Image (cartoon, rainbow, N blue to C red; front, side, top):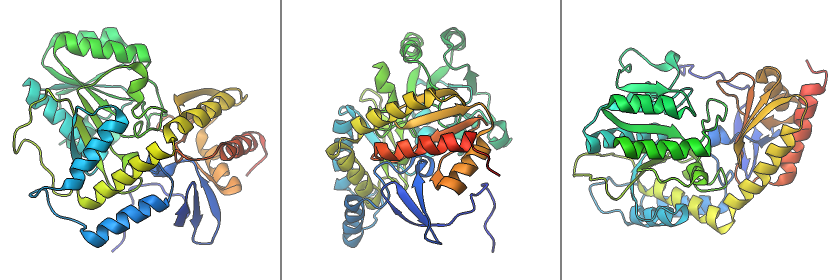
Amino acid sequence: MDLLPVYSLLDIELVKGQGWTVWDADGRAYLDLYGGHAVISIGHSHPHYVEAISRQVAQLGFYSNSVRIRIQEDVARQLGRVSGYDTYRFFMVNSGAEANENAMKLASFATGRKRIVVFDKSFHGRTSLAVAATDNPKIVAPVNATSNVVFCPLNDADALERILREGDVAAVMIEGMQGVAGVRMPTDDFLREVERLCAAYGAMLILDEVQSGSGRSGRYFAHQHAGITPQLITVAKGIGNGFPVGGLLVHPDIAVTDGMLGTTFGGNHLACAAMQAVLDVIERDGLMAHAEHVGNALIARCAELPYVREVRGRGLMIGIELDRPAAGVRTTLFKRHGILTGNASQPATLRVLPPLNVPAHELDRFVDALTDSCTGDHP
C-alpha cells in the first residue's frame, strides 16, 4: 500500500533533531527555521521534554476521560498561570482544527445563534466547520460548505459591524496573526474594535492562537499585545512541541453541561506531560522574552534588505515578502545553505517560525544566506 500524496514534499528525510538543528538520513545538518509549521517551540529533543514524556509513558500512557486525570488539572493550572488566564477553564483535544470546531460549537450553544464571522485569507483547520471557516475554496468540499460562515475583510471594522448588525452571529473568530496567509496582521486597534463590537452585538470573540500562541510573539498569546480579553481561545502546535495536542480556554461565565463536549484522546497522560514540559521550559528559560528580542531584531534587519518588500510579524512568527516568488529562494536556502523555511499562500512570502530558543547568531546566518539566495547566481 502506498501513501496518499497530499503534500508537495521537500526531497529530504529527517532522522534526528537537537535544538534548532535537524539531520537527514545522509548526515547533513540543517538549521530549522520552520519548526514543522510552528510546532517545535522549545527545540527538538529537549532533554526536559524527553524525560517528562518517557517518565509518564513508563508509569501510565493512557486512560480515557472517564476517570479523574490529575495531570490534566495540574497542566490547566500551569497554563493559566503562565498565560495570565488563570480564571478560565481548559478543554483538551488533539489538534488546532478540533479546538476551533469546539470553540465555534460552544459559542453557538452559549448564544443560541448560528452564524460565525471569520476573515479573508484565514486558516482555521481542515475538519468540517473549521475548513468552512478557512478562506481557501480548494480545500472546502461540498459537504463542508455552509451559509452560516461569513467572511469579512481583515482590519475593516465598518464591514464587521455591517455583518453583526444583520444578527444571528454567535461568534467572531480571528487569528492572533494569520499564519498560512503569510503572517498577515490584525492591527491592535482593529482587535480592540472587534472586542468592542462583539460586546455591543452579543457575539463571542474567539481568538485562534494555534500558530501565534505558546509564546511565539513575545507574549503567551499574540492578542495580548492589544490588551483584549476573548471569551474563547484556541491552542495547539507549539503547546505540545511535536506531541499532538490542542485545547480550548473557556471564559468562566460560559456554561458547559455534561455531554456537551467530549474527546477520547484529548488530554491524555502523554499529551499533558508534553504540555507541562513545554510550559516549564518556556517559563524557566525566559523564551517569550528571548523570542521577542531576537525576532524583532530579525524583523528590523530584514526590513532594510533591498529585495524585501515587507516584513510582517512579531517575535518569532515572521513573514518576509520578497520582490520575487519565494519558492526559488526557499529552495536555494535549503539546498545551498542547509536552512529550512516555510512557504505561504502568498507566493512571494517566506515564513520563519523557528524554535523559540534559537540563538541570535543563527538568525544572522539566515540573513546572510537570504542575501546570497536573492543576489547570487544560483541554478
